[in-house]
Length: 159
Image (cartoon, rainbow, N blue to C red; front, top):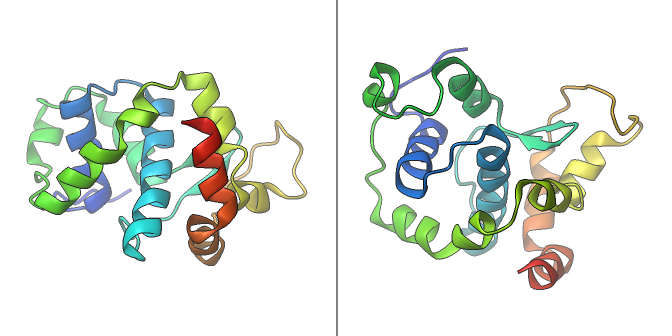
């Protein structure tokens, strides 16, 4: 997988890892997913271009997964030092305003919450609960869900 130092998803992973001490692959993946939904709901555009896949334990952003698996959470390593910093004040403020609700939820509950989202459910249709598959979450489904009452209700019930 190609990694570019200016890739938005990698910049976001680095920023969250360094500034919010997220040191778990699963936690990072769920935070990326929910922040992406929140961002689309607020700004009507994607947080980054990279899509999510519907893995067994919830939505996963493959580029972030691969980078963290290969290079870990040591954000002072050569790889992560080479990844650009987030320059957007708006994005930093957005993360600061939205991330804490996800940080305070334990890993199991956050994963279960991601399993209640329509884009993940739709992408997993026809699969057994524990069946491995690399299905992409449909961007149109993601858009609709981010703007839906269902997502709004899930947010209200969970936080």
